[in-house]
Image (cartoon, rainbow, N blue to C red):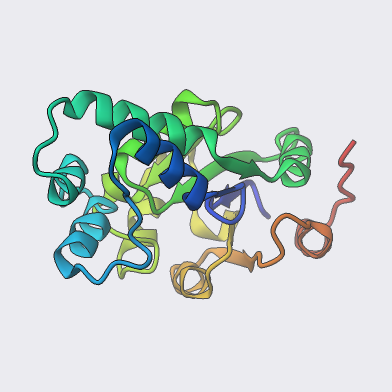
Length: 211
């Protein structure tokens, strides 16, 4: 029997508008922070390593602009922009509000510390029992051992993998969850929820009321 539902955040609960974030940040600080088009391997490595806590994210900013005078301001501006420029999946949040009446709701996300803090500060994590994060685990969700670490964390809630349903947009994460004994659903229709709702109702054997 399912007792808990665990959700990813990026492309599930929200999508970040990276172009708007970059424009906002550049206007305030004079340099771009876009990684998507970069061919700088060291920059990409710093960015990825910060997702698993191997690098401090301030190194990312200093790598782009070595002459930063006030790194505190740079980080604050970035976190504010990251929290601000999001499209939140309101339809899914209504479903989560309904599910909270019957199930424990958790988050499990690949995320760097600064993004995690920005989300917490703007209330994205409100209503979740706990949000487990890659920068704390030292592993991404697709990495071997990630869901075993999650299993250990869930023991304090007296939960086992077979009692948990995981929702994520990326197939390798879904496959990794299933290998560890979790039930899992791939969600690909952001921000639509019709298909996901049907899958949830089928697995949970309930009728979901979004109102």
